[in-house]
Length: 274
Image 1 (cartoon, rainbow, N blue to C red):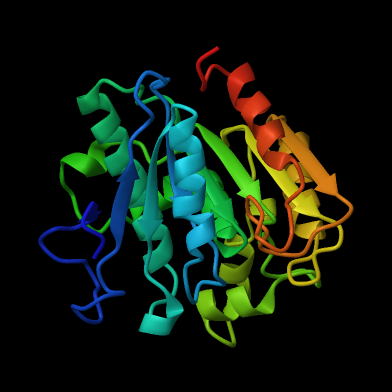
Image 2: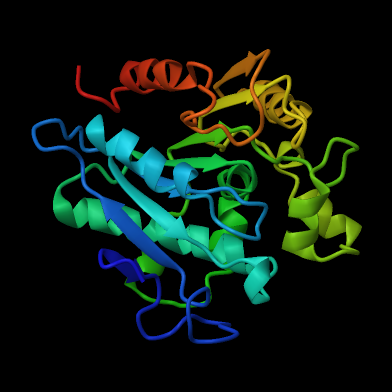
């Protein structure tokens, strides 16, 4: 466990299949830079196909937010490689968001400005919690003080997200890791966030690349279109070039300028200091 990480359930994870690494979902905090704190917070959900967690989409994003005055927390959620399927991942994300909201209130941050950012499969988890927060709340396995907090995010940021689990453009690997190789069709539709968007969902910022050969861009456009149909504010950016999983950029390949666009989007909404 990271020295600054705290388990979501200190007394033991409900439904745990073991006790070692991978069986104790945890939050690692990255406090906002001194003198720049805006009072907002963000929960970071790394990608990795529901099999592993990509650090550059976790700690890398968290440092970006912290440098700009947003308190960030990275969630290490349970994964298929350790034997977990749905609903473990959604339970972890809902619990983490509730904890982050309670901690924001206790620390004097704004409990009404808690965003989610997720990439690839982490984007699917973010979009799922953004559309099924009522469902996730009802399924909380522990009734404690944190369970009284809302698990509805106040903003959703999706980076080249997996969205559909049923369309031809679905990402089969993420679906299989989340639900198993022969999932129930009704459950796969329930967990396709583009089918579940409604007017109660939070505003969204979505980006993808048309050249993504791993997760087709139709996932992003499907979610954005669903938001617009439901009257939910959504900003969508589709860049022509760039492979899957770029995040903020890699040594051998720069990322599209989505971070500058996100910074503008956050600033317009008062999530960053002027």
